[in-house]
Each structure stands twice: as structure tokens, then as C-alpha cells.
Image 1 (cartoon, rainbow, N blue to C red):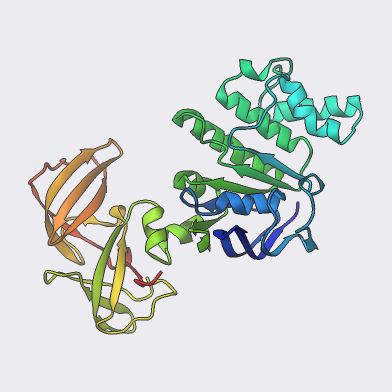
Image 2: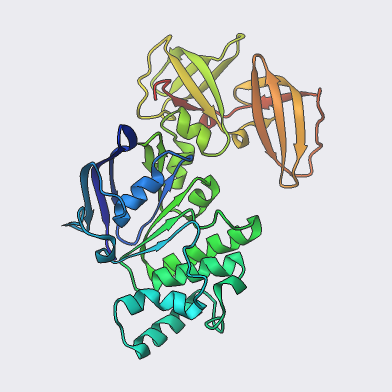
Length: 358
């Protein structure tokens, strides 16, 4: 399997910016996800890798080979589109076999490879069915089999689960990851769904407005966001503006307003942040990091909203001028109601500091 390197890729559509200065290296065998909201440039970047778009600036490499000007059919990629792009007048077998027929393999080779691909995606016995006779999940697996049967060096998936219902999406997500692990194929996955990205990826590239915001493992992206956008887009986070009041080698003390002082670990800071007294900073505090009862950084607030989900108890708590999202894992504790007073504490390790600058 091949690695993929994008070297300072920029793509413009007339005067409009598609992506700007995308510079990444995707390792051989890696499951790498482009994550971001609609219009952020993730599909444009994928299409540049596939060869459907040519970059305005920059180079594309597979391993160390410059393939920037190479046509899509010369790149040995498998691609699964959002709408699957299956041929409705063909059978399952004929759809999967299409890429092999284009490559002019013998009938016996095609039969052997297609049957193997059908088995791999659990579609044995479906070869003679028309595409219109399949469920959405089965059509998605046909598209995946068609992409894999040609034994590509790189597998590209563009929002492949967006047309499925929640339960089927979960099942198919697991199936795609299983196939990727078993085959060891370099996989680039495009999604706006943070849960898909977090659960499937080796690494994630978060994009916004055509630019890379952060690249890292799911743990790095979630626990150490570099800016406000990443912290707010990945999961839920309480993002609070504060003023630095005291610095030591190990701790940062901040004022979040209303005389409320919090202390956090200095090491829990974005690499983009330079600390200085009286500077403004942003705090990112995940809801699950806030605990009830006494402890470090004790806060008292009034419950504005109470929600029992089974797994957790979710509160919105008014603390001074701030409304905090709080998630308490359900341990058969009493569920408090709107208007109740609650005592919270935020562990020093639960506060993450970011620069106000993007």
C-alpha cells in the first residue's frame, strides 16, 4: 500500500478559494480522516488526490512519485462516493466486476475476484440481484466491494454513510473499519460526523474555510484542541474567556469574571499559546470533566436544565455569568431538577488553555 503526500496544495475556483496550503503526509496503511463542516474543503482535497481536480498550486505524491498530472484511471485508487454511483441497470455482480472488465481481465479471473469481494462484504448469493432490489446498506457494500475488487493502493471514501439510518450507519462504520484493518489498505475518509472520525481514524485532519486547523490522533484532537474552532467542533466543550492572574512554573490562575477564580495546569495549554499576566485566554472544559461535590476549583450554580439519558445525567448550570454543560455518568445518583443548587468542581487537569487567536 502507498503513502500519500500533499505538498502545499491550493485549489481555486475562479476567485473563490477551495483549499489553501494543504500540506500533509498520510502513512502507508493509515486510516486518515478529513473532518469539517460543509464547504470546509475536505471533498475538494479528496478529489485532488483522486485526480478529478488538478491543484492550482502544489504537488501530489503517492510514495515518492509525483502523480499531480496523472489521470484518475492511472492512479490505482478505489473510490466510494456519497451516492454510491452504482449502475442501476446492472446486477450486483456486474457492478462489482466493472473495474475489472475495464482492465480487460479474463472471465475466470473476474469471476474469482468478484466472488471473493462479495464474500468479503457479506454479499454472497446476491450476484444476480439488481441494484434496485437492495437496501441502502447493501448498496453501500456493493460500492465498497467495487472499490476494493481492483486491489487499489489507496481507498477513498467521500461521506459514504450519510444516506444510511443511524443503526445501519453504526453497523457499516464497524464493517468498513474491519475491512481496512484486515486489508491494511491506506484509507482516506471524508466526513462531517465527528463520531465517525473519532471512532475510525488513526489520525484526523480538521478543516475549516479551506484551511487545516489541526492534525492529530483522535485523543490529541479531543483533549488538546489548538483553537476555539477545533474545541467547539469536536464534541461538546465549555469555552470560557478568562484573564490570566498568576503564573508559576506548573500552574495558571485565571479570573473568569464575577470574582470566580480557577487554577489549571500550565502544561494543559495549546502550543499556540504564550502565557503572560493579564492576557486574555480561552478555557476549554469538557462537560465530562466537571464533577459534583467538593474538590479543586469549587463552583456553586443553579440548574437551568436537567436531562436523564440513561448513560448520563446532563445539566446546564448557571455559574455567575456562565452557563456550563455538565455530564455526570449515571451511577444511580439522584437526578436534580431545574432550580436546584448544585456544587461542582473542575479538576486542574480538566482545564485546557487556548489562545484567543485562531
